[in-house]
Image 1: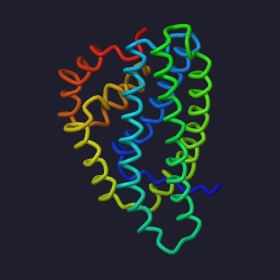
Image 2: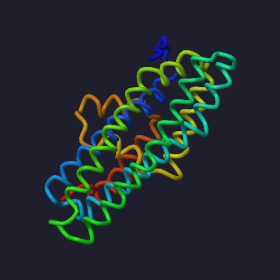
Image 3: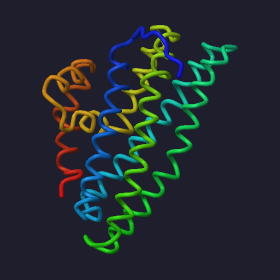
Image 4: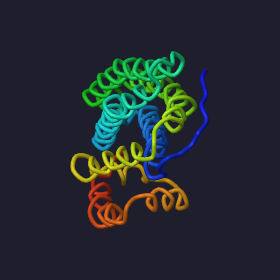
Length: 218
């Protein structure tokens, strides 16, 4: 596996990228616990899963449509580095049928009640969790360090602005979703990395709205 020197260009963007990985893992652990308890059909568990799917989709769109093309241009002609980016896209493609399998198992659990489809859902969640973990580790060890080593500060600031714009317009649940359940030090570090207007929006609007939805609460 290729590794690259880490030279963070924009700590806001760096924090956003890595913090989402923790949230992906946390939510899949919550889904696994709900499935094991026979509660995969509960409404707030289904709502948590729908939000998780959306967060995965948005992250993949940001990477495949914005981040990786810029890294690809920066490493043009360098076979090993381009291979890392191809592996990232292949990872995303491999996740799609696993997400669909969890989707089907969730529908089965909802239709059959607490006693139904628990084994199918547990198996589907386990397979997705293992595949996503491999992808996240691959990204953390190779793709993101590569991006940090080749993109200029202006590009990281542009990516941070793109991510912030999506938070403000299309994905206001991202910030409270990331900080859901994390420790006070990590929470403070993440929120401090955000511009003050976003922190204030999260305090007065996004986080209250997120908590009202009670995602995963069973």
